[in-house]
Length: 105
Image (cartoon, rainbow, N blue to C red; front, side, top):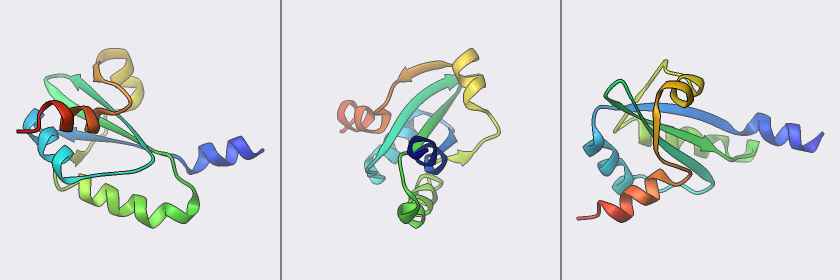
């Protein structure tokens, strides 16, 4: 089933940010194609969920983008389910672009 194959290669990664300033810096430095980004707050922290819409050919590219994000954020054990249930989604689908747009000094 083609749809299933596509789902398998999408990568859903959640990053923890120390503060909103880190999100602003990240938005200025990291430009990604084919991603959905959601920004959550949970327990006084910010969490950026990045859904990479990829196929196998772009795997190296995704790894590079994750490495770039990790210059501003950390990996986290907090899951998407936890964020959806207990967190607050403050920017949906294009959090990086929205941050870049509204906080570009």
